[in-house]
Image (cartoon, rainbow, N blue to C red; front, side, top):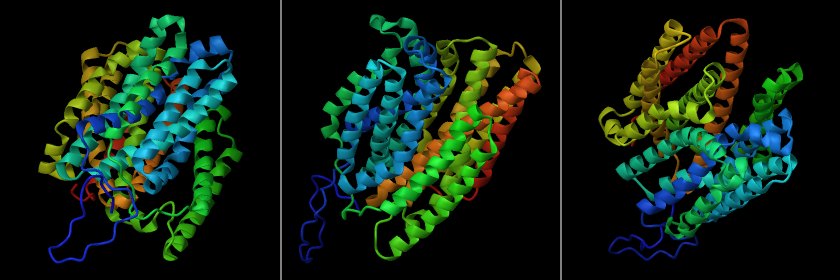
Length: 484
């Protein structure tokens, strides 16, 4: 269970009063302001994953960074972010989610300032690594707080807002980055893409006391072996995903996947033994064995990979073939963001009527949008109908809105409130890994096909692959339980 601040313990009329729990009392629900505060930190972490992309040229000119250093400015953030998510969630369970959120947001704000003040490219890379670690501390607390402090339709609406924040944040990062660089506010150029986080982070920190303080009734122990094995697994997989395109996929790099598999098997055995002894594993095998959670995570992987692959390849086509700048290419994604946000307002009602079939419907809508885009690109190249392109992008966003929030609810439904941080960490880590994989695979495939075939053929084939991922989500959705 999770405690909540301000509520007396419930007792039967003749029950003997229970001794006070040692854990932090739990909060009396999640107010609108509290939800806004936690989603603000989450939005900052999402926006900063993409906002820097459109500033790389300016960073290179100013700090004289080479391609490898610029790659680390982008991927270094994602590396430390993905590595720390599960541990960040467990720390929130142990020491209090509001506390870890506040520490993470404060660290994120400070490291954002350091990024904006970076005198050298090496300093910027180090600051980005620290910024990713700070994001890993705060992000798991967002879903964990929603899970622990809400229930029923209130939880469904809050998770819908969480999903909208994730999707819209990725698009806003592209638009906002291009806008800030082009405006060159106060003559600081690219530094403004990091400086903008500081006032927003400070404002959220001033209101953080409005967030309910929740944590597990019993403080979970530390799992050093599980943490080390999980870190080794993640590092091996991420090294392949991040370094593969730049190194040309050498054979020795693929051998890291074998090491990852060995580490993962050792992790599973170590966690089972620790839980059998009554310990607190980093990843609880009992919680992860729930069918709803496993099936939900299985659907999240192709969904997130397709989502990231679409946005990445779209950026390559828009900026590479059509010559659109970061601001203009982001602006064309407005139908995606608008459709996603609008549909999430009604997702709880649709889920109440359709149950888990809302994911099936979302996969169908997404697939139709992708096939429409493929058809428009194939028949209309090199000047496809802008109106039809916008319709296809909007359908993709609407489908994503039906799928994402519902999957989040299904996955967290099987996670006890006391382990909400762990569940949130596992979910966001799976999301982050699939996102990196989707962007890498789809981007590499598009570039390779464009060199061999025409740009139109490459785009159509990648869109067909993305439609196939939507169909995988559809098939998995037929086995999902109804959201509670």
